Image (tube, rainbow, N blue to C red; front, side, top):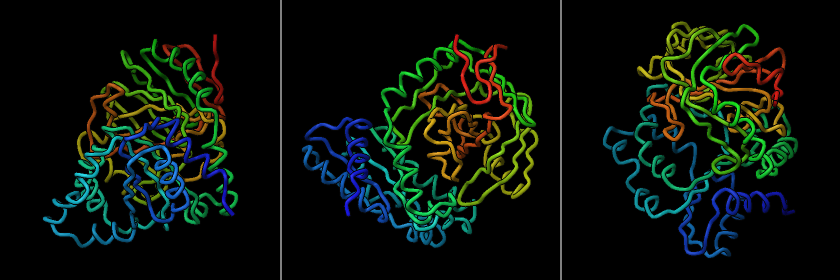
Length: 355
C-alpha cells in the first residue's frame, strides 16, 4: 500500500527546499533502499517538467573501493559523474544505508582519503541548490532502538512540519545572537566561552536538510576557552565515541578524553591543524525531534540542545577554520543547561528567554 507521506516528503523536497522550475536539470543521488522515495521524486520531477538523472549508490561498492582502489583509481573516482553533476541545477540526496556501520572497519586514513577524493564532486553539489534527507531503513531503525514502523512515524513527524513557521521562530533567535560577541555555554561538567563577533546566523528551515531546524554560527577560530562534556555519543565513520570531554585554550582543543574510543577521538583531532578548532556552533530548534537516535541529520536539530563541530567551518557562516574534518558533537541543555549572550541569560533548560 502506498504511503501518502512519501508523496508529501517528495513534494517538500522539490517545492519547498529546491523550488524547482520546468526545464531545470535535477540529479537524485540516493541509496537503492530509498527506491520508494526516489520513484516519487522522479515522477513528481518529470510531471514538473524537469530533466531527471538518477545516481544510485551501493554502500558495499563504496567500502570495496576504499579498501582496494589504486592511487590512479582514486584520482579518477569522479570521472564518469563530473559532467552530469556540472549540468545539474539542483540535487536531492537521500541516505538509506543497509548498515550504518559498514565503514567501521575501514581505517580512518582510507575514509579520509576517499572523502578527499570525493570532495570535488561534493563541492559541485553544494555549489548548486541541494537538499539532503533520509529514508526509513531497518538499519536506521535498529540504530535508534525502534521498530521500522516506529522509525517511519518519527521520521515523517520530523520532516513534514511547517517550515515557514519554523523560519519565523528562528528570526527571534538570530536577533539575539547576531548582536552578541561572547557566548557562554553552561551545563553538566561544562563551562565554555567563545566569540561570534561580527558573525551572522544561518537559518536552516528546510532549504538543505529535511528534517531541519537549527541556527548556526562560526565561532571565531582562536576564541574558545573552557571545557565541555557531551552527554550524547559522537559517531564518525561508524565508530561511536562515548563520554567526550574537551578542554579548549585560545580556540584549540588541548585535552580530549572519552569513556570509549578515546584513541580514535584524538586521531581524528590530529587529522590536520584545523581539526582541533571549532568550525560550528549550532542551536537545535526542531521541537518535533526529542529523542537522540544516532543519526546526525536528526540529532543536531533536537530542540533544546546545541552542537559544536570541531574542524571545518562553512564558508557561508563567515568562518575561516579549514579542515578535512567536520564532526558535530551534541550537548544536552534541556536539563540544568544555560546559554549566555554577552553575559545575559538567553536560554535555560532548553527554552529561550525573549524580552
